Image (cartoon, rainbow, N blue to C red; front, side, top):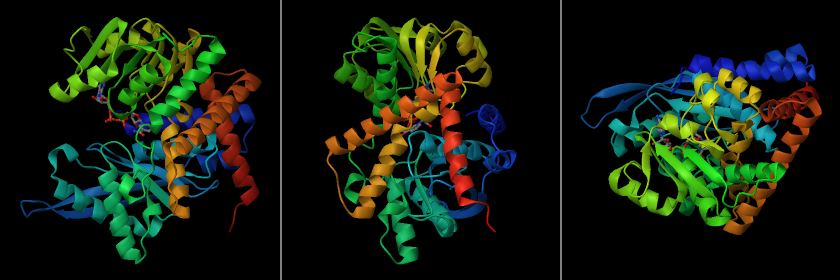
Length: 417
Ligand code: NAD
């Protein structure tokens, strides 16, 4: 993962840019430049060998002018306050772009889940929850999963929080198992939302998704599901995919179902029968219609951006393009659907899960997907409208839309005390 400070600076400079376009009150700009609260907690945990290890846990709450804080929890060895703050800020803007009644937050525990047992992960999770329970809650701050956290971890948070509060509270987190008040459609919501954004852009460009050539970096939750939806539901040609070990390419198209079977057997997409092995760099620069980075931050650098050979980039991952990379893409006329719009489908269905929980209802997959579709299309059109009005790229358009919405809420609420 990239250095947290660089990531935070990138988010702050896109706020500054939007602030200049809309003549934002300097006081409100200052408010949005800082998180409202940063909690850093030390988590003593009994390891399986009987020793005690102390982990660092973080929860950053950036802004709640539009509603309770919302944002995932990541477990990753290098997690730090700057990175979590940058991600919390992105959540504020992402929720505003698709008009969800939420603010933005993010959490993290500096640990390496790949080296920990399930029991150790459970103890870390319960201790982290016990240390932050006073500042989270269904109308206060609703965490969810992120990198290396999953539905089981969300279930442990529900149990710990509910036991401490003495009230069963599944609505304190989203991304839960379906049998514990999770929502149908949550697992592929980010990908479905990104595909909807790609489809709307394709419409605007008069380039049908059927037979469109698509390259996808990352074949995890976001990358694989996007490939599957594009292939099954739109007849698109997935010409290249990759994971941390490398990529594969076939100009006639790959079948994502066969590729995932191969990956499940061998641990990687590399070596798939009927495709040529390529590097991750080659994947990013391969001639295609739509490129979808769906793995890591900062992979589209200036050098890569100069070689990208796509009509448009749809950011499935958070922060995949560096500031210089973004400038080059703009100069070269390559359209970018920015992360705060393109991957907002995940938090949108998290919101739908929360609404179902509060009403103790459980909606059909069709109902969830049609509400997701409506939110994404509206978000896409609102971003396009702002981009046209200010004559800027979609990334700036999305930030302008988000900052205007948050700033307006702050102004109406006022500053008190
Ligand atoms: P994941 O762990 O399921 O998948 C990540 C994929 O990236 C894996 O295939 C992995 O092999 C690949 N990868 C890792 N290192 C790589 C490298 N050096 N080069 C190429 N590929 C590499 O994670 P995910 O949930 O799919 O998340 C991917 C991105 O999408 C992250 O930036 C995440 O923050 C963002 N995102 C995810 C969601 C969600 O709902 N899952 C929502 C919004 C944003």
